[in-house]
Length: 68
Image 1 (tube, helix red, strand yellow):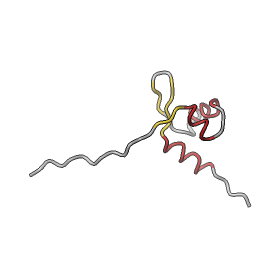
Image 2 (image 1 turned 45 degrees about the horizontal axis):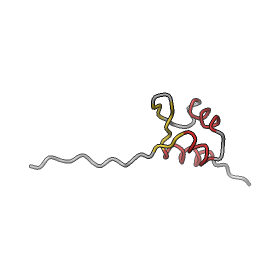
Image 3 (image 1 turned 120 degrees about the horizontal axis):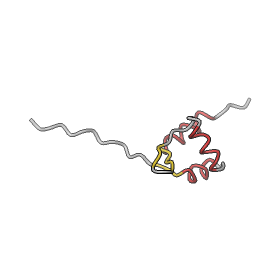
Image 4 (image 1 turned 90 degrees about the vertical axis):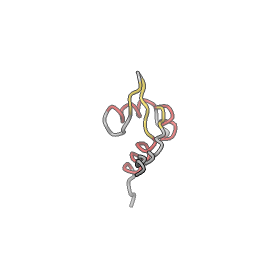
């Protein structure tokens, strides 16, 4: 009986606060507010934050509003 290999994990791409700000066309302070307010997921690495690319996509898709 062969051992079962674990399923491959999807690669997670992390962005800096400056990269997120550039993508969203907002200031870095706005991104920090979203992270500290719990509206956008982030990981603290030392003294800086890294934001998963999926968290940016989720935030933007949830933030969409329909204009009538």
